[in-house]
Image (tube, rainbow, N blue to C red):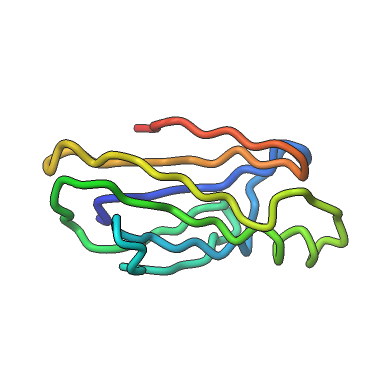
Amino acid sequence: MSHVTTHVLDAALGRPAAGVAVDLADATGAVLASGVTNDDGRVPELGPDALPVGVYRLVFHTAAYFEAAGREAFWPRVVLDFDLVDEQAHYHVPLLLSPFAYSTYRGS
């Protein structure tokens, strides 16, 4: 299993957000992995099974998702930086998305 996983929920529609491109990058901005959310809003494999302690970034490319649905949106992308402080722990970082707001949390 990937050390970092994510899923995207479209809070305005109350369902998973399929087709959102996601990048996992390191602190320098180098992209380590990319994926696209499936019908359940998840990227099943995103990046390596193990990462060293450090700062990482998830970039959700939301403009194309909203454009494909014919919906106006304020966020062309959502960028989330987080500290990976435990090399043994799994990091799940969900995104709750709507056209004009988003929230996130450390999931399990």
